[in-house]
Image 1 (tube, protein in one colour):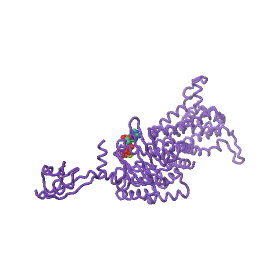
Image 2 (cartoon, protein in one colour):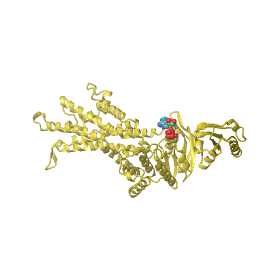
Image 3 (cartoon, each protein chain N blue to C red):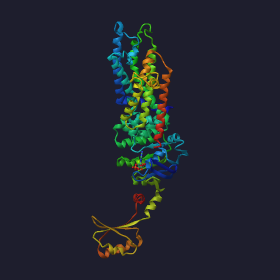
Image 4 (cartoon, chains in turn yellow, green):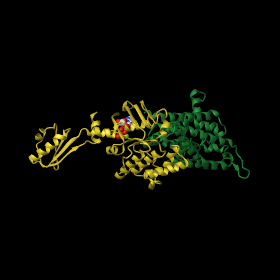
Length: 307
Length: 266
Ligand SMILES: Nc1ncnc2c1ncn2[C@@H]1O[C@H](COP(=O)(O)OP(=O)(O)OP(=O)(O)O)[C@@H](O)[C@H]1O
Ligand SMILES: [Mg+2]
C-alpha cells in the first residue's frame, strides 16, 4: 500500500533521511521507530506531500506522492506531530471545516462527524474551543480529523504522546480496531506500544533504516541473545562462578537484597544446574535464577547504539 | 471548488473571531466618519467654501493648501496603507508559526486554491470595511428621497469605489505574498507596510520631480494617491491604472503560490 524506494531528504546540506526504502502492505499496522531526530517525521511529511523528497520515490496506493500529490492526500488521514489546530474554533466547527476541505459534504458529513466524535471520545467537548482543550483532547481532535474522510491509509505521527495511561490503552485498542479497515503507519517512542498494536516495525536511525521486519521476527532476533540472571542473599566470589562450565562472562552488581549476577549469552542448559549446586555448597542463599529474554526495547537500544 | 469555498468561509469567519478584524473596522470607521463629518461641514457651508466633489474630501483630497486638508490627506492615506497589512499579516505567517500550515497543506487542495481562498477572504473583509460608507452616499450624491434623483454627478463616486477596491486588492495581494515568506505576523505587517509605502508616496514625496522624465513617469504610474487625485475622484477611469492594479494583484498572487510551493522543497 505504501511503497518507499530510496527516499532521501536534505535540509540544506544536512541529510535527515538517506536512502530509506520500506513497504507497508495493505491492511497492516506498521510501527515506525527511531530515536529523536532519526527522520521519522521527515519521512512522514514526504509521504503526505508536505515536503518534497530530494531524491527517491514513494507511492501510496500506486500513486506517486509527488506527481499525484492531491490524489494521494485524498487517500491519507494524517495526524501531524504535536497536532497543530486552529485554537479559535470549536471542535465540531473544526471537524466540519476539515470535512469540507476533504470533500465530505451534506448528510455524509454529519454522519462522519458524529462517528468520529463518538470514536475518539470527544462527545462531551464538541462545543468547546479547541484552544481551551487539554493536550490529550487536542490529540484526539487530531485523530478524529485523520479519520474524517475514512481514508484507506492513516499516517499518525506519535498519536499517543501526551495521553494519560487509560487513554493510551483505549487508543491502542482503537488503533487495533482501525487496523481492520485501514493501513496504518504510526511513529512512536513507546516500544511496548508497538509490541501491542503493530504487525511489524521499521526502525530507523540517523536517516537510515536499520531494521524492518515483522514483530515476531524482531522478537526472535532480540530473544536470541538470552541471558541468565541469578540473585543471591550474600556477597559472593564471582571468580568461583567464572570457572563453571558454560560461562564465559559475568557481570556482578550489588542490589538491595544482596548480589545479582548476569550472564550474557550463557549456555543455560549446563550453567543453571551447576550454579544452583555451587550456591547450595557455599551457602550463598540463592534467591532467584531465571533466564531473561531481551525485549524489543533492548534490541532497539542495541541497534541504534551500534551506529 | 467546494473545498475552496469551505476554506474561504473559514478564513473570512476567522476575521470575526480575532480582535484584528474589529481593530481594523474600528480604525476605518473612525477615520471615514471623521472625513464624512468634515465633508458635511463643507457641504453645508455657504459661499465660496462649498465644494464641487464631496468624494474628493472623503478620500482626503480636499484643499491641500490648508493645514486641515493636509491632515485629512495624511489620515486617509495612512489608514489606507495600514488596513491591508492588518488584514493579511496573519493569513499565512500565523499558520506557519503555529504549525497548522502543515495540516492545511496536507489536505487535498492545490496550492492555488489555498491562495485564492485566503485572498478572497481578506478581500471580502476589506469590502465589509467599506460597506458602512455606503450610508454616506445619499449625502455625497445629494440624493432626492422623493424622486431618487441624484443632485451631483455620480461618476466620481462610482469611479472612486472602483479605484478603492482595485487598489486595495493590489495591497492585499502584496500583504498575502509577504505573509507567505515570514513566520512572524509583525514582521509580515511591517514589510508589507514598507513596500506599500512605495506605492503611496512614490510620486508625492518630491513635488519638484520633472513629470516628463522617465522616473517621473514611472512614479506617477505606480503612485496610487495620484491616480485618485487626477482620475478616480474626478469620475475618470483610466484603464492603464486598472490594468496596473489588476496585473500587480495577479503577480503577487502568483508569487504567493510559488512561495507556498517552494516551502515543500526546503
Ligand atoms: N525544517 C528543518 N530544517 C532543518 N533541519 C530539520 C528540519 N526539520 C527537521 N530537521 C532535522 O532533521 C532531522 C530529522 O528530524 P525529524 O523531525 O524527522 O526527526 P524525528 O525522527 O521525527 O524525531 P522525534 O522523535 O524527535 O520526533 C533532525 O536532526 C532535525 O533536526
Ligand atoms: Mg518526529
